[in-house]
Image (tube, rainbow, N blue to C red):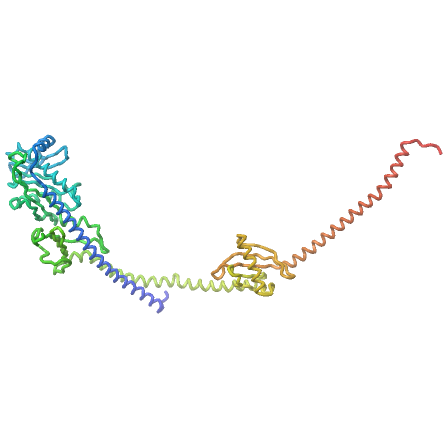
Length: 516
């Protein structure tokens, strides 16, 4: 195996240096890209949280337990209230499934057995509140539809939308899993006494590391309420949406060069700095933007709807996310260096040395071609098509054409003839003094330009033999003509007296002979 030369080693070192520079540039771009992607992703998340909060604030602020008698009377006619398949976990509390055939609304109703006769009024109230909520939400820019829980302030009656594992109506940042239902109800019951007519926020810790933000407010019946006496009480309307769930699901598609970024914890604060997220807090005091902590990074964003979000990611998550990539980059540099060395050696053996041999063969072929042209018994001329300049001519061509100017004029003339005739080759007879030539002109390429290849063959001896043959033919034709004229003359001279003799003989034969 041949040993690499100093130049090849320098080329290999240069390639490795370029790979290192590219790797460093890639790492810098990757880090910048990750920071930008993370910022945009978190800002998008807070924007959605704010949109959800504003939508709930507007929609829930318009909820009212009052209604005219006609509405509730008509609603009772279209309600189907049936006992639910599963019984309530609270003794003496019955559970019903409610279906409204007009609005196609499904609700779950829980109330004491003592209030069984008023289940239609409770169901009508639930349908009224849900239609008010979802009618307002459908007109909001967020277009999100959230679960609803309507619970009497004394905790006896509960009306809620059914829980679903995958809700087709819920947006991607709501928590509707049935496994989280009990935690939501427990948190709602804990805030019944503190509810006011102003919308308030709180947070509840759910399973699998999820967090839900509860928005709740008090609804008081009015004096003109058409509800039954047992239902004419204070109610607390609750709706909720997820935080960390939206961050991991909604924006998983926003990927950087290193892959999808992740945030372990999302903590929300109101405009007064009070935490909305459940204890214990991980972010603590943090200024807007990126904050370095001993256990991780915190990114704080202050929204426009009295909500501040702080996103916390431990350093261990970054190491787990980017450690394999960084290790892979190091291995890539090492592998690239070794592969570059092997490729350089392979390239020398596979391409460089064969190319050198091929170049030598081309040079020898060119020299041989020139020698063939010089030794040929034909006059060969190569000239440029654009200007008629003589590019190559052998000694025989120089001898026959006397000088280069005459040679150039001849080939230029036939170059024009070839161009205007639209032909690629042409054969023509030429006369140069006593010489008779047959010239063949062919369009070709020579020395990286369009050229005309001209070959001339001396046919003087053939022309002389042809002329001698023509003279012999003419002499034979003249001899044949003289002979024909002689025969014609002789036959005429003999035929005239012969006709006289024949006439006399015929006359004698036709008359008898007399005696003399």
